[in-house]
Length: 166
Image (cartoon, rainbow, N blue to C red; front, top):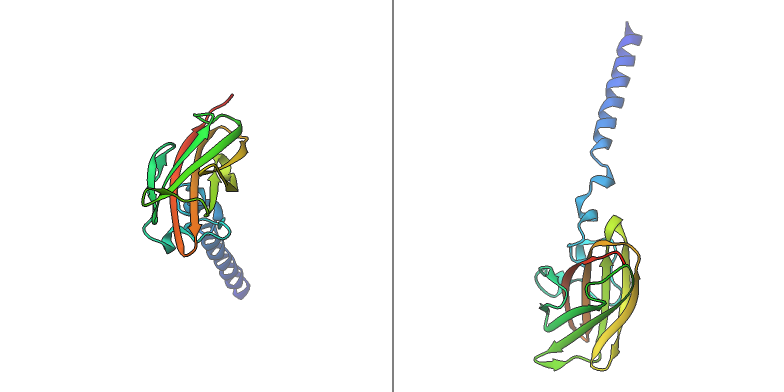
């Protein structure tokens, strides 16, 4: 009878541990799947640019071509082609502060796409704006978290867009 109690106690303990571990499945972590979270809450930090939460409130996602506040800056992100399609896409960011173009900032895009795809690209200054080309290999919904830093001034804005098949 003691052996029966030991076996049932062992099986009960194993069952409890299994149930507890089942609730810890990282695949159930909805924040990892939510591409609209700011960089401060994602798993992929952007180098040299502090997250939005360090500079102010969380940004609300906007469509490409929409001007948004990004900390002390105003930013507009566009693509060519528009709308973006699978393949090479040119990203352009116009960044201003108090109506004047900001030309000496660090500007990064953290791209989040279907299936958890993530890319971070640095936009370089080009004729009064910032730009870079990137290959978007998967069609579907994407999010671009743009991060801007110049000296102690930081800002962030979020854009959402769909990449179409060619």
